[in-house]
Length: 115
Image (cartoon, rainbow, N blue to C red; front, side, top):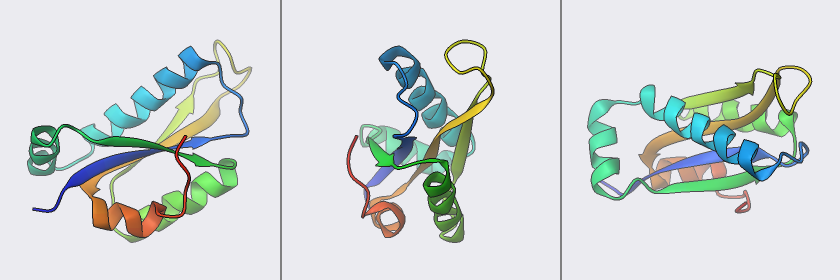
């Protein structure tokens, strides 16, 4: 099987503090893994669980990439913060994609920049 990875797409319009940011990324990674096929997870784990955080401009762009990922039959996990600490209302912060093959994920995310 080809090398696997997971990507997290993070909204750049929110200006989230570092601690909150780490938690949102962790939520996206875990939720995406929980929705994934066990055999893929085993391979991904054996390869070192590669994760990449990429930037999207805003919520609209995040949803565009979610739609593209789902079209490619990739697992996605949309994360919505409850709005109890930093945010004053529930706020969509990021999107987990995969783990899946690098080739399949790159079809969707290859034009995005690293965070």
